[in-house]
Length: 176
Image 1 (spheres, rainbow, N blue to C red):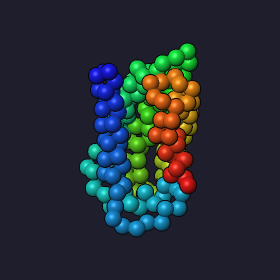
Image 2 (cartoon, helix red, strand yellow; image 1 turned 90 degrees about the horizontal axis):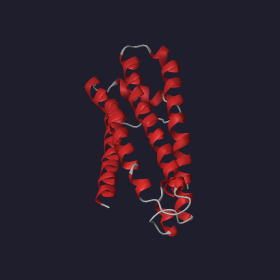
Image 3 (spheres, rainbow, N blue to C red; image 1 turned 120 degrees about the horizontal axis):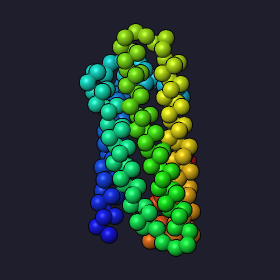
Image 4 (cartoon, helix red, strand yellow; image 1 turned 60 degrees about the vertical axis):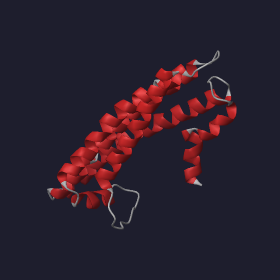
């Protein structure tokens, strides 16, 4: 069990680093019209110091590595005939977070093109970021669903009711 706790702690550290990277990349006390595109980020990141953007972007891949180590805890908590579901969920989630780390790092390019006055490159940069975002989020939700199914079917050390604490449930609560 100490190994499981170590992996969980590393995964939590990864989540904190990813959050710190987000804050470094585009936190601002200003109010912006978030229109569903990346253009507001372009305007926000134009005024953020370059070093802050570089550190924020670089934290994405570092955090992703720690997340992947955290996902190693999931198979160690698998039990039952369908325990392979947990292994599959962990592998899918690891892939999603690797893509997420790359996605995170790409945001630095929004700042670069804004600072250089090359906002004409927005569509190209934005298309690349959105591709990586889809490569991260689609498998991420698949992994969340598989993990939730494994919990409900009793294939983990967690009781079935623990499913309410999984990311798939908390994500849907955020939509309400």
